[in-house]
Image 1 (tube, helix red, strand yellow):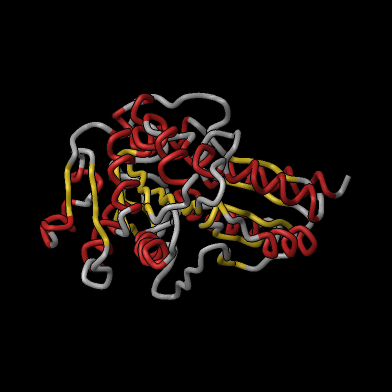
Image 2 (cartoon, one colour):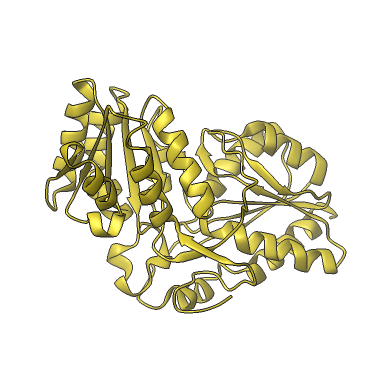
Length: 325
């Protein structure tokens, strides 16, 4: 299903944007977590934390457009015994406030949840300066910080629950556009455990976030060609599911990693680092490469920068061919 409001051309039913699913889950979970305080940087109508704020005004604070201060406030609240959650655009909170996240959240290992909304090139017309395309790499580089990248609305809601249940720092990446449904009431979301969405013996397609749906579509195309593709939703970039990677490498002998992120430091880099140790096999990648995005509709950008099901198919063919050499 293609359209101005979607970010992936697919026949799958469109669900809510992951930022919307996060916002509704946070609103609903407020009573379950009475110690939770939410702080936003004057973008709550975009990050959807405003829904929590309207329901729990005594536990919601807008500190203005000042991401470094945002993190400092959250760290202070957590140091005082609160569980704090902060939200802003992924590009702003991870880039502008990286040092504060490093020293005020990760180093003291505080119970602070960092939500990066409007991540990736699928933010669309807002352009390169607004696109968080290095956020996963930055957050994965911080010791002890969990990094979650849900694929659809159901997994975003489940990731929100898992994030709030977890005691310690977490980064949750969510997006702006409506995205295809991957799960339909069948989701079990466990931090650090990949979800196998399709079995296969010839190649494994490993994806997270926006790229899970096109990876499933790619598996269907590959099946028609006689290539049996396994599909893993690697919703937790850190800690990575090493058991799933080892099994995939051993049983399928070739991997493709698809992500809406720069090539360096993201899911592909993490998979390659682990597979090189566990069981080296051919790996191919579908990602943004080494370039900034630009302004355009989400669908136009996904197509231009080569993050479609067709690109996953092409990468899978190459990976399968490489293992037979």
